[in-house]
Image 1 (cartoon, rainbow, N blue to C red):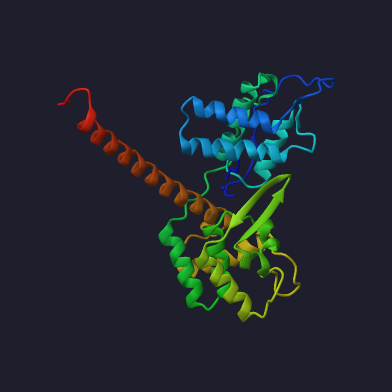
Image 2 (cartoon, rainbow, N blue to C red):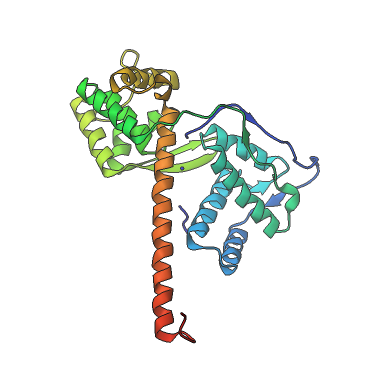
Length: 292
């Protein structure tokens, strides 16, 4: 069964409600069979198909994070949470991952390994970058002839990629349409939209890059770090009439997430409306009685 999201990082505060560690406790082994039974149980309880896909994705991520013995000990979920934060997942997403893990542990009767506290952030709200501002940044970079800067801005607003994953953005990966990444044992696959894929390959061809990473510092040929990329993006902001504090990968990534959330919400609404129309049609055809 196959199951198929860095935007906001900062200073996080944790409420440590982890049970007292017992060094002699052997832990609990997570098996493929128990995962299937858990998901089957959720399905039988009437969990929606969309939620089921999320459950499968989140619990699979936990399974892949665990070491080879696939054993959860006291503190494992707290370590996993830290790994998710380090990988750039927003606090709400991290909470969702942990929530499903807690439900699974309850299902197998091992609540002592749960991590019930939710992630809280003490950092100030990240400034919101509107889609209109983002498009002005792209237009400004294009008018200034800065193709590399244009592509970096588009990249972070189009796919969920972190700065530290840029070295994996190779010509070979772009041609395949995806790149596999791993950070703190958290694995994921990033897929490139066809439009972005074509632009990246055209850029690499013009620059004579036949293989390997396409985004490196021009002088030393080293991977770009966050500070370097932020300088590039903020240099575009004045020309685009965008506040410089919005010129960051985090703001672009937050725009990506909010755009996806809006689209998914619209799709969910359309599904609900279609389902309602189906029920009304069936009621007219074989309803017990006519409803006024």
